[in-house]
Length: 442
Ligand SMILES: NC(=O)c1ccc[n+]([C@@H]2O[C@H](COP(=O)([O-])OP(=O)(O)OC[C@H]3O[C@@H](n4cnc5c(N)ncnc54)[C@H](O)[C@@H]3O)[C@@H](O)[C@H]2O)c1
Image (cartoon, rainbow, N blue to C red; front, side):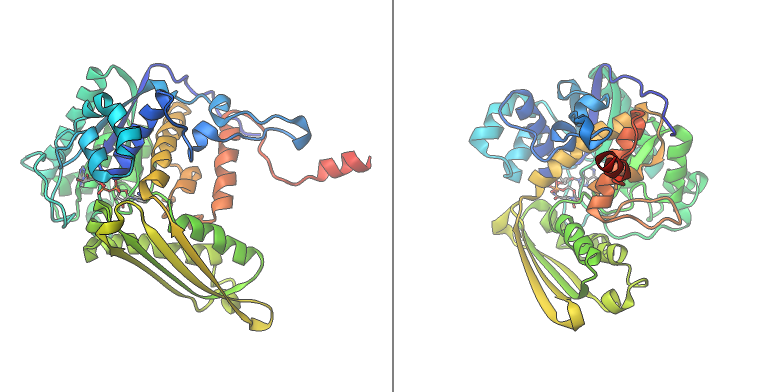
């Protein structure tokens, strides 16, 4: 069995940098602090709550993930952010309205107020519905990227951080197709210099992180680091990267239900998904260009799980629609409806309706934490480039060219855990069970 060289230990502080200090990021930092102060539990976080089975079922070895692999502890995390909106962490958490003001925001006021967003690289061309006042100025996009690199270095020394990770928690940018500018590092750097329109702000953060040797995760569906120039740069710099678009509400459920239909060879002819959402993310997604980026991300899922080319009779003609409607009264408490038209034995039709009253940022915050800790582990373990084993956390998993993304939540979960076993030099679990049968019989 291939065993990795041992991970470098998680000594000292780990800085978690988020471009974007909105609903998700403020819920994440406030949540970590609430857990550190014993005010709440880190529910939804694999790294904090999940166990991992090792060896045979009869061995009864199931440590917590955080005791199994050397992860940074919550007490070692320090936080930094950029945002074109100058609100500090406290103001942002209050505005987002995700966490209860009295129970979870006011008691953390001193801590949250200290998180002041650095001026952002922001351009309203890429996020139409926002106005920014806390924004960097620069001669060129390249110059702006260099300013982010300086921020990173300053943050590291001012906070005495030993290592850093960056997780994009910024708004969803307009849809951009990868083109010539994104092909090689040279073409990308030239395009930055020339202020090419195909270079969006999120790409500048990703470039800055990778150049500084910092792992980068993209929580939104925009390209950011999902193109050859930055993928190659990540490999050259020995930096793990991963994306895109946190898998939280409706898509999480979709990637649970669709694999169930396929596993039982039940057919599908329609899946209509609609949402109402009233937070700032919903407002940004009300712009058709940002929505297009999100729509592409949400639509790809069924195609890859159901493999219509392999099962044309079951999945050859699916009507898949996704809608997001901005509806302010709901704030961050999204409501999603799914109507699923499926068919069974001899083609008889059936329906399933799902009504998920979820809380977007409550589902996303533990993902930010897990990604930060697992990317840091990957980095210390010498892993670089796209980290496909973290697909579990994403709607549109980034993959190496030529490989289709794996969307099935259960395959993703098994892959994640087997990768951790591999990192730690433990045997991977195949669920074959042949030896148990022999043991029992013999
Ligand atoms: N909450 C979820 O369930 C979920 C799931 C998947 C993806 N996402 C994505 O995560 C991102 C954050 O979601 P949210 O609910 O916190 O949104 P939000 O609107 O509350 O926060 C986004 C923040 O990013 C800032 N921002 C925009 N452009 C920026 C830039 N160039 N640099 C730095 N900051 C910038 C905005 O000012 C805002 O404060 C969105 O892109 C969203 O689509 C969220």
